[in-house]
Amino acid sequence: RDATRHLIDELKKTSPTVVEELIPGAMKLAEVQQVLQMLLRENVSIRRLELILEALGDAALRTSDPIALVEHVRSRLARTLCAAYRDSENRLRAATLDPEIEDQIREGVERTEDGLCVRMSPQAVEEIRRHVAEQIEPLVQSNRPPVLLVEPRVRPAVRRITAAAMPELAVLSYNEITRDTIVESVGLVKA
Image 1: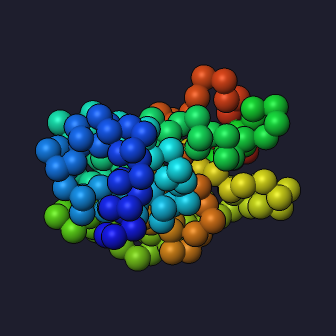
Image 2: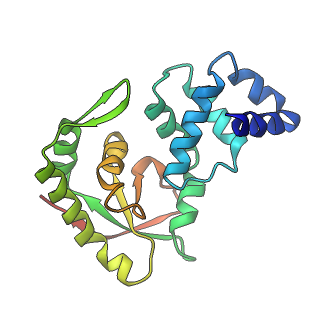
Image 3: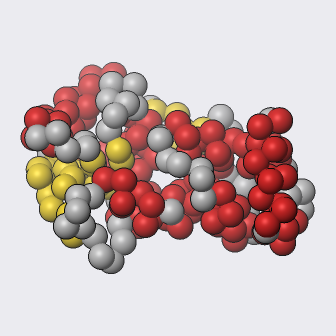
């Protein structure tokens, strides 16, 4: 928490309004820290702290759910996210999920006070992981970042399901793709 306080104090020197509008009125320091930790767990840089706090300020008026807050921040960081995974020609090569699997995941995961709870059978989860691994293998073999592109509402759940088995997998939502990014599908994850 001290590190979070230090980062915010440093930002307050250059952008006092952004900080004052968010902390402590809209969010507590602990809540901001939780969002930053969730971003870092997914290898999302928090260097653009001012933009992150602005996004939190906007979203905190509507929700206090940390998962929803993270998703809002990620969509505001779309340019940074895309730049991390696309090539010099602005091409983002990614596998995508079949809508049936997205529905299966949406129905098999629920939000609780403690975060996301996966209610799917271990076999169903393992099957999804296996199919994802098969579709991202061409990216891994060609030394490209493994990216899975999914619907925004299931992105946190897909990340939760794949994180332990595939920590290097970047799970992006369609909301995180900038207009100048050319998406090239390398495979469709089917049931």
